[in-house]
Amino acid sequence: MSRANTWLVYHNTDQATVFQPEPALWKERARFYQLVALVEADSLEEVFRLTNHIDHDWRENALVKTMSPNPTRSTSVGDVIVQDDKAWLVDRTGFRRIVWPDFS
Image (cartoon, rainbow, N blue to C red; front, side, top):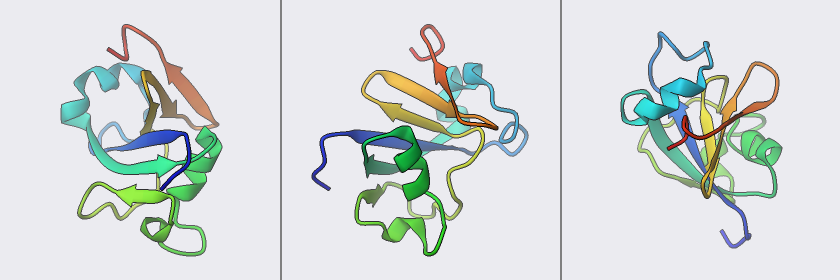
């Protein structure tokens, strides 16, 4: 992994909230999210593509470093992608920025 942009991918672990994307849940990330990957990519869309099972297991992508022993599902609605001090919620269509104070 040697690209300039490193992103952190967190999967929502709470089945009751996984398909109800809500930025406020990020405040309780220890309860609702698990860090599953570090990704070298140029955009949110590329991060999303690299952490999805499309034609092979996403954990095999050279630009992805798996951070969890068993991340088996693809990145999906309700998950969060972070770069530096900015975070985006994977929404039903596209991404929704999580803004302060939700992010802090």
